[in-house]
Image 1 (spheres, rainbow, N blue to C red):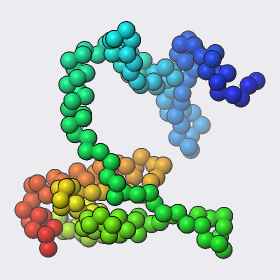
Image 2 (cartoon, rainbow, N blue to C red; image 1 turned 90 degrees about the vertical axis):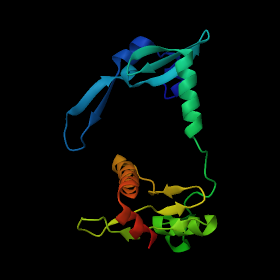
Image 3 (cartoon, rainbow, N blue to C red; image 1 turned 180 degrees about the vertical axis):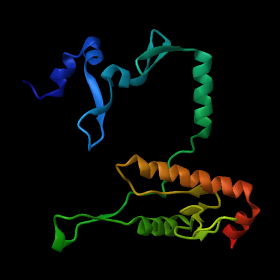
Image 4 (cartoon, rainbow, N blue to C red; image 1 turned 120 degrees about the vertical axis):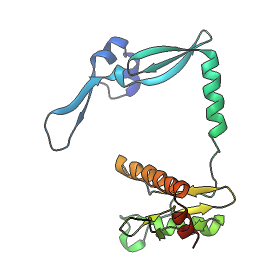
Length: 189
């Protein structure tokens, strides 16, 4: 049995990826929650003889050229590019704990980036939501006044819940800023 993935790739066939299965498990239960073929998991596109095709969950679609151009133009218009202010987290290797890497905390990271970029640091500054009990919400982690951006940051995680929280935080903040003059006034104070 070869462990070289190139050998496996050389013997790969459509029939094999339609037959082989992918399963997702709840870590506490022995049976899979869901199963499907590897083929159904594939998503992608290719250009064949000048025609664009897309594969999504086992179904092939021919992509109309006008639709492709309109979609690309719409996407290209929305992409603002990489913000060079956001450098990687700093990792340190303390001498006394040579085997344990220390990774910069989210708070320290935000302070460093805000200081270097001129963005306003708003991390941990809670604004009361009108007519709602509780400590309030964070409008954003940093405010880029010049770029007119509310910036939300979450330190990397292997859990989708962190990403969901990031999107929810941004959506809630944007909705309140648009709909509540009281919230906007409190944000400015």
